[in-house]
Length: 333
Image (cartoon, rainbow, N blue to C red):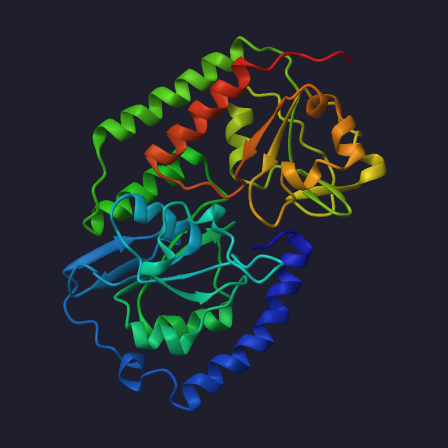
């Protein structure tokens, strides 16, 4: 996962050199199956136009799908079981961060990469997917550009925008893709999503003036979320008073030392649930954290910066936030 506009491109350049060598080596030494590199497409009996405005075609409906972690999570909820998953899902301890994988059963899929931009081309070749589903981050694929070229030799690639779009549209697009792949998207789930979104908007109106921070914590301090995360503009658009720093160490966060962790007064703190962030039990002995008014008042709740973008999952997000807001009150300035 990328975390800065500047670092985004420098990181891409860094990975470009590394993965170009790895990818070229895999193809050159024959690790990736040679027949797949020249896979004939045949008549286009199945087609889907992705968010790069590319019409991706196949001779038949794709049955074997490999997907980026959050895309796999969305498709899984609609009954499309990805045979392979990749993405920035490795924890600092070497494990797998399951927070962004939703209901994906790791015993029923293969991990092709655990860090951003990484896809094991040899394993991808063995899986012989009919389709790779990637997400777009402000128009850029999650797969590193040089690696993406090799991936496209092995299978068609669909890209869906997650960041530079509204949550309702992103949810709708994953539903469209799931339907095209034969997944079950129920109309009642779409209705429940719309009702939950409306309910959240109405609840926010009953809690005027609430100050909300979305944060990630690490041993060195707090990262206060900025507007690049897809959920924050959505919450703000519904009227929630999300405090978004105007500047920061990246487009995704402003990093504060623990000494400066109280810079932004908040009535409610939404905490990053990913295992890359410290959780409540890990912060139990952190005196600065415990002294923050919202924490002291028990006004904290979970927040997933990379939510599962389906009608049922986002309805749960909205309904859980409604429950949180109903027990949240303004704190003294």
